[in-house]
Length: 408
Ligand code: GLA
Image (cartoon, rainbow, N blue to C red; front, side, top):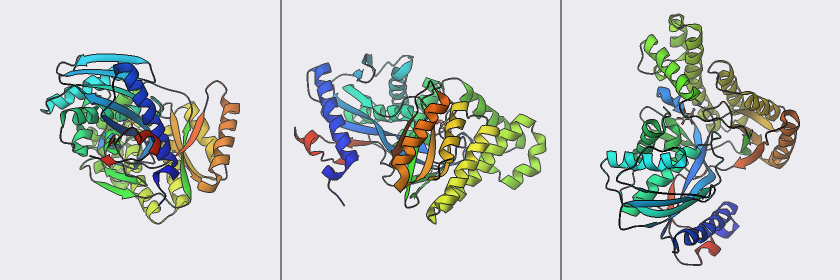
């Protein structure tokens, strides 16, 4: 295995953290004592199933929020969002309602206190390269980064699953999105080199490696849609209605044949919603099987079927997503493509022959630009990375050497 200097991801991280040190000094006239990273994620398949206790297959990615901090002796938190050039200060013992990134910070403080944790404050700067609001879980990354910051500052025990639950609670109760557990869980528990098949009922996880010779490419349409209080909550409520009418705790409790036998109980809309969730759960199992037998063709087909179902039955795709997915699929190197995340706008994901990635990225971007006009698509390959973690400062040469010690 190559050393850290030969690893481009580690090199990129080192440079980014070195810059954060400079920002920390500019903001607080001091050096940070702790550094941490919290990754975004891409979901390969299993979309809009987690709010129905279903199955998902996401991977944490090498796009992340990075945060540098220094604990304080009181409960004040002073935080600087470097990318936005915004600064915010509050008392962790008395978080109030907020908008924007501050809502995540306050929500996490609230959820930690609700869980009985005593909070110590900190000074922090953070920055990242997860596209914001685009379906790659920039919000979960932010939540887990703040939770980890409180844990580091206050010496709180770090149980990844408990922290994922708590961050979801912050998102549900404080930010106002009735999301499932997928994003927070994969951000907390991601594994380098593998996707995780997650059972969103008992939260059990199984690492599944990608087929050999393929790359995962993000297709960011450049379009955005705000999730808060919107269509996401409507769709998850419809799925819950369908489960109630069908007499099951969640749609996860029905297989395709069960649903067929009972779907006459549902009106046309709820029938389509239920169909998506039930068949998508079945596709997750098949996708994990395809990955285990190293079959990218089968995996790609399942991703395509997932997109069609999200577009036609769950109705959470959008014109820009449909267009970029079609253009990606038309490329000979593409095994399959689908929207990823909550949908409506933002990012899609494609499974692409590894040796053709550079050409694929260039040409699909060109074709999308020509077809769409206006929004600027961005395509980039991502690698499966570890979940939220801490970097320890070992000395001033840390940034230059790129040496990394992950812990906790
Ligand atoms: C958002 C939510 C997740 C999940 C996806 C759709 O990312 O936060 O809980 O429901 O949408 O699969």
